[in-house]
Image: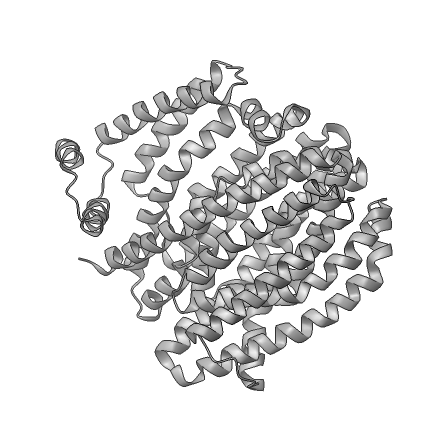
Length: 509
């Protein structure tokens, strides 16, 4: 078995576990969001989303890009200087803890000014409460990124994807059961974040993942900050590309419009679910190949992984793109159906982001963080300009177009740079064939202009589409040897022999 196949199987195992956890998280998260959206008014739902958006931006600044750099750095130090891993971890935690306390004060003092920007008085009160959740959220993110560096998924899946969403759902339900006022949801959010932090700290101490010992290395701290700062700015720009629409809708329109848009936006963010799951273990595993100078193995890993991600993502994209009304009606109810065109536009943007693969992480691995910053800056500026032009005229559809275009630009630039530096790209011949088949098929179905509001009827049509699609993929002989090796590994892991699939593969490979 080649090193690329070994790397792919490790990533696939991690992806499967993270995906399962993400599905659970999404399920409980959407239940919680649906309860909030139905129980409170659309304006109150908009205030809640604005408060969490501001908090999320602050979280990017507080963590200084460490969540993206630490998995790579820990993997490198483990191989080259394992004795310094403990100091690296401790130094990073201390820096983030101190920075988070500073930003708690900034948010509390600036709450009134932020609320005036969005013409929403209730936002100031909300920010003064949720600001206290910032240190907990920052340190939770740091602990999970450290576990990624050790190639672990347990902390992400158990605590971030399972324990917290269940806890949050229970607390949200308690608001409804006890008929508590809108302001209570922000205290509940603070309680949920703090409880998650203390449970995670206890688990780290119990399994001795790393030593919770005070150790600050100034040199390591400087090196980490220099490497991470461009990634911090990239994180800020990513928020501008993905949340400027929400913020500017609040500025130009109203919190009610923000509430409508935030029915479409979280649904569209389901589309990169497999991409994000694969991204969890991709940096530490592929960084090892890069450290050994094995670019060809990196390229092969990238191409096969991108093909897998696309094939797994296609059903999710198809249902949102072909049947946006049915999707929103089923999840959020009739009062949010007007967000269907925005969902369709956003689905295109997120799917384009998905089918080019993990280009951003590829650039992080080869230490091209400065270029990532440049490409995201270009896209963010374009996003702001498009929002300013389109939102006053087209409302939520204009915001969706701005986000989709900015994702397109960022991904094209990142993919071009990755190819320029390493000759890595996703387009193997066995990936191009499924792309052509799928988009041709989707365009045909879209031209029929089906207007379906029943999610079950939509799923029936989708099932037929997927059966025909995967038959055409097999007929085009788009199967690679790595696909077979992964299937055999899964078969061995399950301890069963799936003869019918082997029989089908022998006919088409």
